[in-house]
Amino acid sequence: MSLLPGLGALLLAGASFLACFALASGRALALAVRVLAALGAVALLPAAAGAAARPGLVLVIAAVVLPRPVSLLVATAAAAAVALGAPLGTASPPLAALVAAVAAAVVAAAVSASAEARLSLGTDAGWAAAAGGLALVAAVAGLGGVRVLHWSFMAGAADAALRVPQVGVLLGLTGITALGGSLVLVAQLTTGSPSSLARLSGQRALLLATGYAVLAIGFALARLGSHGPAALAEHGLGLAALVLGLGVLAWGLLLLLGEARGDAAQLEAQAARQTRVALVLALVAAGLGVAEAWWQEGSYAAPSLALALAPACLGLAALQPTRFATLRRGAFLLGVLSALC
Image 1 (tube, rainbow, N blue to C red):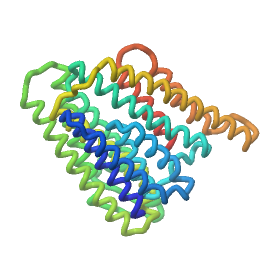
Image 2 (image 1 turned 60 degrees about the horizontal axis):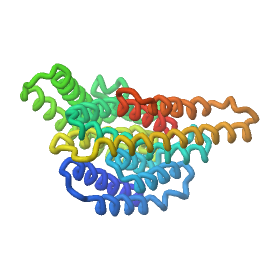
Image 3 (image 1 turned 135 degrees about the vertical axis):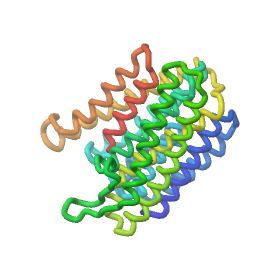
Image 4 (image 1 turned 180 degrees about the vertical axis):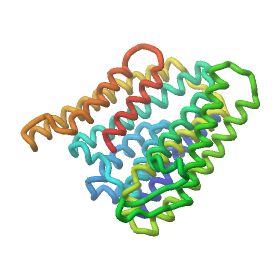
């Protein structure tokens, strides 16, 4: 792991926590958030020499301009991928990947503003915590695969596999507690049950999952790092996704501590504007992908075309004035991030 990019990821994680805490507590911490995020972006600048790290750096800079909790969490995950040496945007043409990185930061800010608008209208913050738990479960499944069900984690290729039992156990515990806590919270919220025991049990399970996830990340960095940078780079995207899932869960849990106080109409209008901007950027990225494919291969029918068009289609769905706007914007965000991975 590179030292300066690792420090940048830690600074961005601190900025994300402050942004989440400021939202939950109603305190004005915008200046501290911007300073920490800017320092994190500066620490990542030496990594810009590598082409595979540039989409991550561009995403971080865009998130510094739009310092919402979710955009900063996405930037933290991107910085972690850069620090671990994981390539970003290799499936897309270089210029298209840079534009898609900006789109990811913008749509992440839109998701954050949309969620804050729903909370300001009285939506229970338990939904955010449950969504964070499910995001963490998906990240665990993406990193460990089906082996997590056997309390196992394998690093390396099939001919040189390395079994890391501590990480496998911790990932399994993370997935089980996060899934159980999320399902308990969803059951309590959908049935309208006033049971405080069910809600408290779900919250405590998610808190336990947060601790297991931190330990899993620490053990994975220590054990994989002892086998050289190649082992870290191989699992860099999976670990970055785990960092993002952990951050989203922490955001949801912090929201349970306070009450959103923003202007719902203004936040929703801001989310709609940012979604439109992100859609334009996604379309530009798709157009650049087509142009670069035609220039390099003589045909627009490149494998990267479908990968570039899918986020744009999700963006069109996110723009529609109908229900579940936050979920549709979240799907748009996942589509853009998948194009970068």
